[in-house]
Image (cartoon, rainbow, N blue to C red):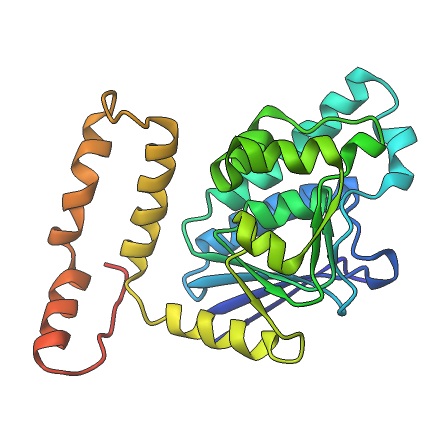
Amino acid sequence: MQEFLLNVADGIATVTINRPEQRNAITFEMWRQLTELCHNLDQDPEVQVVVLQGAGQEAFSAGGDIREFRERRHDPWQAKIYNAKVERALQTLLRLSKPTIALVKGYCVGGGCMLAAHCDLRMAADNAVFGMPVAKLGTLIGYNEMQRFVHLLGVGGTLDLLLTARLVQAEEARQMGLCNQVLPLAQIDQAVHDLALGMTQLAPLTQKWHKQMLQTLLQKPDLLDLNPDETALPDACFATQDYLEGIRAFLEKRPARFQGK
């Protein structure tokens, strides 16, 4: 059985974590595969938006496959190798130049919650449950993962998840900033598809550069140490064909046909 399913249609790449009987728990090998998959999606000109979901309705992902932990994380050295693989996958997902949407149904906990957090948008069904109960296992998250949660939730929300190890229902997760919208389970597939389809009509360079600028801002919040490329980026769009097309389409009252050039 393929552990990741990929479908590309209408500019949307839908990636499905395909281990429903294990609540879509992610193995060590799957973290490696995810890195490769993200690289391929980034280079695929047919892909404009990426949707990440879990198979079935019970779980987006229950996190890392704990059955592997005795072998893969039995001491600090082995854990370092394992954690590096996870971190690389998460950072590759975060740095994808195309918008990413986590479609969350059911349990989204541990590594699954980290995975959703590293997408740009998180759309949750009303049966979604979020959490980072690592304190129940005696494990820690990494600095980069903690930084991502702080960016999304602030210090208070991050400490709430980590120190209580509690599970958070969808509406509370939305209020915390852990997801963007909560939708009825029966409607979320169509709603996310419509959202992603609308995003495919937007200027791809604008999407790419806004994501890039945001990461620069998060890393350099005072904006004092920008390099020349970072300083010039907000004006780069005015030298693109897409900018000319966008203005022309607006004046001609027609949909723009962006080419990513």
